[in-house]
Image (cartoon, one colour):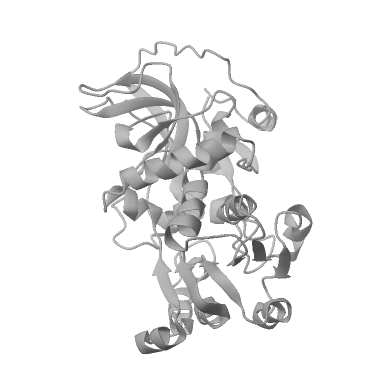
Length: 383
């Protein structure tokens, strides 16, 4: 169980450096309850509470996981505010990705054994000590991958990989513009681009992040300036791929920058989220700024516009096999030391629920820079 007060902070500062044992042993826990972070209603951070919940048990084809770390992403903020289509009813346990140790399996569940170290996609409920999820959403992790790394790996690297290689068909010599380059997906994009020869990466981010990420991006711009003329100074013809998690006015800018046969991919809408609670004004402003796409113009200019939602692909569109293939290729790159998840910080469950600082994309403090939605990857760490 997590300790109170300053002891929590002291422990979590050390967690990122901890290594897991070579042969983890899953302790037998005799309990009918577990701790979880519960969203009691849509709104601010005060809507998150750590409470006891009934212990889940695996059904047929499911894996029960003792969670060691779970991810906190910008989508979780949108869920908390109710800024998603058809939000589920509260109270609910947020979270879509976690890592941990297999504690038991349901009937007709093959491929996993008690004690296996895994990462998993979860359709909510990841912010808890224990989760149960179908085996198709569970993946074994390498022995040298830590649990925090695994929790930061699944959503971000899979999304980045599928957008670059499955949707946009990234190849040698291409150029990519990625917004929120200092965020978890942005850094995954930069790392994956470095695995292909002669790929140029243009990135936008807040100035205070430039020093930390300047070596991973070829050309870095202040996200608060008009980056279109800056990109064209370097590449007059534009770029081959635009990865946009902002939406709003950036949609039109992205399409303007596309070369013929280029691909624009929208995978988020963080410009619609400002402040602690849902803002109709922010939503309306962002929607109004979105350039209305003319299909005839796309045809004439030989440009492609696409959207990507990893969660919809997994949980609504039966894309498990596609995701499995991506995970296998990504783990191969990890084994070759070509990619590595970046974990910003670690938080115990109580810290995450009681942190009074408003957080945005994967936990960034909004008060740091107005209008900045670059995401950091904060890992709620379960003890």
